[in-house]
Image (cartoon, rainbow, N blue to C red; front, side):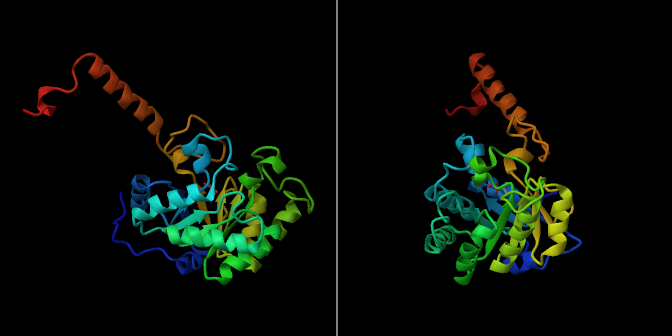
Length: 274
Ligand code: KIV
């Protein structure tokens, strides 16, 4: 059942208040106005203009090549849909790691394009960037665990937090990452690709909402990539779920068009001008 578009706008304080709430938070990605409108009608709490745009729209193997200019463009498209959901703009690789000034400048660009908040990847090492961006009143969502921008360090998209220890990706390090993100002033944090027991422990130990993907059911909320929900990709990843098979429906619809044109059934006289 579509949610009314007259529902109240979701704000950052609304999200913060949903920590330990009986109603889990929901976040879905979108990259353009058409899909942002569709996603918003579902009643979702947050729309993430994710750098996953690289893999699901641009056809690149990981998120590393995505640029700040591209993210600005996609945030602008989503903002034009005027969703009631909170728009989070993802800071791409290379737009915030150099120093805090770069991080603040990049965050400002996404907010000017229409985001209400930004997301960035990393824990302990990104504490200064999160604090600097938060100081200029731009809310920051952290992202720890399987951080796709760390593709080369991880050796691919690999589940994190299985090994003990304080090295990047180790269990104790992930707990430190979560505390760092919280202490730096993030209003929420995505936990991606970690054992559910660890995601539960982090969720219990920090005061900000955790949004899981591939992190089990015990987080304060869940996020999925729109193209996975719709079944637009041929992949079957363990941590995603196809709620529809739009890829198959799309191939069917396009094939029917091709067939009807070739059979001279389309366009018919009813769809012609006289
Ligand atoms: O870019 C993205 O879509 C993300 C989500 C998978 C959390 O970071």
